[in-house]
Amino acid sequence: MALSLEALPLQYRRFSEALISLADLVFQERLFPSSHPSCARALSKAFLYIDTMLEERESVAIKLIHGSFYHLNFELKLDEYNNKGLVFLYNILSAASIEELQFDKGLTKDELESFAVFMASPVAGSKDGYGSLQQIRHIRIRGGKGKDKEMDRARKRSQDTDDENRFAREERVGKIEDDDKQVTRGKTVGGDPIGCEISNVLQNLDKLKKSKGKINARRIMRVIDRERQNTSVILLLNSLRNYDEYTFIHSVNVAVISASLARALDFDPEDVDKILIAGLLHDIGKLYVPKTILHKNGKLNPMEWYKMRKHPVYGANILRDEGLEKLLVRVAFEHHMKFDKSGYPSAREDYTATKESDVVRIADTYDAITTKRPYRKQLSPYAAIRFMMNFSGTEFNPEYFDTFVRMMGNIPPGTIVKLNTGETAVVVDINSSDESSLPKVRLIRDRFGETMNDEVVINLNDESSNHASRRIVSVIDDTTIDIEIGMYVD
Image (cartoon, rainbow, N blue to C red):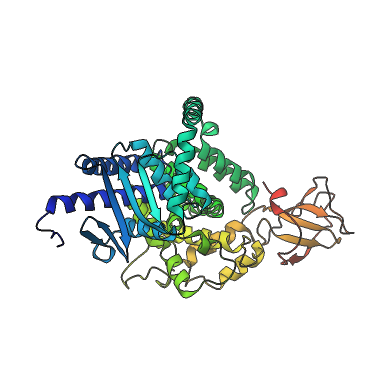
């Protein structure tokens, strides 16, 4: 006869608390590095609940059956709990054909952490990955496809080489301590891993003219240096970098372009810095979007598109949960809401997006359509500006977009042009916001089509120079041209 909840309320409560805290731990490990405070809190909580259950018995077994978790005669149904962590854990275990987890007396916090890190990793469902669990002595996994036998073999190998493994662990601990000392000593931006990654992206910045790019590159590094005191911002950026390199690079570009536009709109310096951080974090919700969707080489199906469109909501939830300021939360939530209130998420008729979201939306669109992706060709900077003009007043704030066009110039930096001499050049700077002003260009091919290795920069606006006879005769919009613009624009 099955035991009722009324008969054993304490055991059921302990089971549900332990399972939910375990699911939260795996979910946090999926989202953040193990050093993140959220992971540390989740680990302590999960270990406490599981260890409490092990005080009364030698082992605790949790089974997966048809959308539910079972312990003894207790059932915890997924559809009765509004908990994304539980669903996440169930899906991971199901994908790996795991039917039962067993935690044995003697479980350590390190073992629980190793288990959670592994289950949150991309190899959790692969056969080869199970060797990584061989040192977890007090957690047993049973399931189909022979995985329980494989785990037994892994445990045997671990027992046979115990001394060797212990020596290796001691060596690794020593190395980690040395690395920690290096990080402690490296308090400048150059010694900050995420600062170095952002600096590397900025070295190849090719979306803005030189002067604006350099000004805002310095600004973003100052802001990152200051934000090191806010561990949430730095760790979120680190998680994004580790999860998807393209989204990380895109976010840095959007931050710099957004800051440039905010300066051109005469925003206060403090607001420019806030927009810069908002640009860095605007796509943080893509941490919840599967990589198979982010990197799909083709059109998304309706279900995939539904998941992709949820990333602004995911992003707002992440930033809110981390206690970051409301402006950052709103930009993450609003950056795909169009100026005319269409777009996504759907907005009420009386809803008004922030001015910062209007700025980031322009930068986000420009960077996205001028960047090559597996599923589409990029537009040239010149073609991108012309394309975006069609949506001024509907998708984009018309006042802000007009300022953006003036900022970028009549022929934006990065545009490939043909000169009347037959030479090919790339626009590297603009001389002013006056539409009649001509840009600065760098020659990249001579009139015979041969690549030019020497750096020849020409100010087409300077009639007194020896290059006064050169003029732009056409813009080359063929984005398949074999030229790395980043080599010529800094």
